Amino acid sequence: MNKAIRRMWLMVAAIVMVLLLTLTYVQFFAANALQANPWNNRTLYEQFGQDRGSILVGGKEIAKSVPANDDFEHQRVYTDSPLYSGLTGYFSLVYGATGLESTMGDELSGASDDQFYDRVMSLFSGDQPKGASVELTLDPKLQQVAYDSLEGHNGSIVAVDPKTGEIKAMVSRKSYDANAMSSHDTDKVVAASDQLNADPDKPLVNRAIGGDLYSPGSTFKLVDTVAALESGKYTTGSTLQNPSELPLPDTTVTLPNYRQGGCAARTEVNLQFALEQSCNTPFAQIAMDLGQDKIRQTAENFGYGQDLSIPLDVTPSVFPRDMNQAQLALSSIGQYDVRTTPLQVAMTSAALANDGVMMKPSLVKNVRSSDLSVIDEFKAEQLRRSTDAETANTVTDLMTSVVDNGIARGAAVPGVKVAGKTGTAEIGKDGLNDSWFTGFAPADDPQLAVAVVVEDVDVTTGSSVTSPSARQLFEAVLNK
Image (cartoon, rainbow, N blue to C red; front, side, top):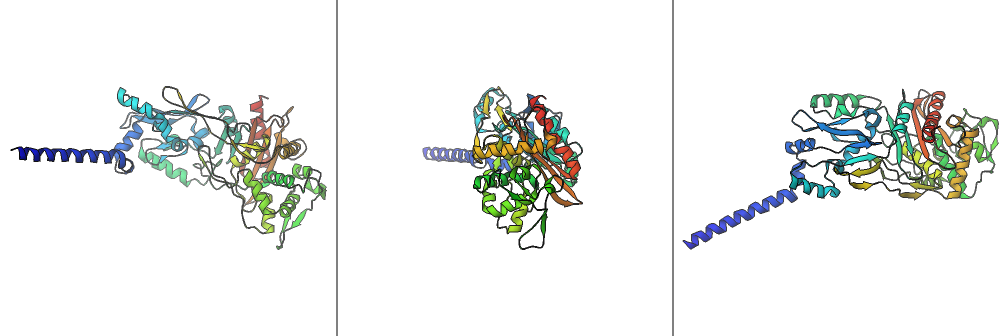
């Protein structure tokens, strides 16, 4: 009898051990795979049943979860969505999360390591866990000014605080309404997705940090200018040849000078006049003289080719390698295979504004748990030194002259010193261009650095949008 009891006890102990091992495996080792299984509807219902944290700008919720009258307890809704959708992204039952809804997903859902204590307390209290709120660095007034400036055009505007790296405005147009992608009606979501993806204007792309990138045009001459001054071979007083056409080495092609400014007035120029009028041929000769390695290194010092998270992932800007002299000449004026983001162009101006120091850009001001305690908070951080202070200050003076005396007069603010540079990138579409402005103000105490790009416009239209858009942003910050 004792032997039978002992066998029964051993069998029960073995079963309990197997159950414990199985439970341990499921909870700790197989949990991620089970949650990711597409047949696991429980995970889907759990995600959309959560009271997800809000995304805020200036204290106002631009993304939040509200009670839903369906199988899911909460519905994600977006306020002023076209104004912010390039940043928030969407939280979709069908297509998952994009934008900040994805990159800040752990914090918004309450699943981050910093929210472990909150999750434990929820287990004991029986309350439903609530995600953390994420407040952005954006200035809602600047965001609206930037968005309205691009009315009727595709393009992007980025504005940053050059002293801290805080992103004050980031706009991408054409935009879209994230509410259409976050509906619980899957048929409507699929239809909305099909329509957005079929749109040739690519509204789902955040042009400020990704997509196909842009040719920077003559805004890249700021990099050339830094390289020239750093080399010691050039000063602001150096005499530069300024032909109307520059034969490109080993080709039958010539590079024309910029014809919209005053370049044709002089056959010899200094660096100041060349930048004021955005003359192509002097900068092409400078680049060929310095060589592609120097120009590339200077571009990399300003962030080209570097990975960056703000915390949205930023597509690295590109300066090509293994070029011949003709290709280098074209690259020096922001053409050929040079590709960049508006954020990169804004960061270049910001570094020049900040005595050559580039601060790490960020969209997130703070993250707060459901009890409003701070989980994470923005701290200004130096990303790199792009150039020395003397060179940065010299380029600032040259950029100020571009606005005072050159072709960027549209950015001028009465009573304020504004530093700027325009750009026109030829894109080969029926004579249309991508038009640029970048700069900062006040030049002697910079508070805002901007980059503006407008797609597929003629030169006149481009200049009527880019520089005046920057002026409006400067005026908004300076309360002019």
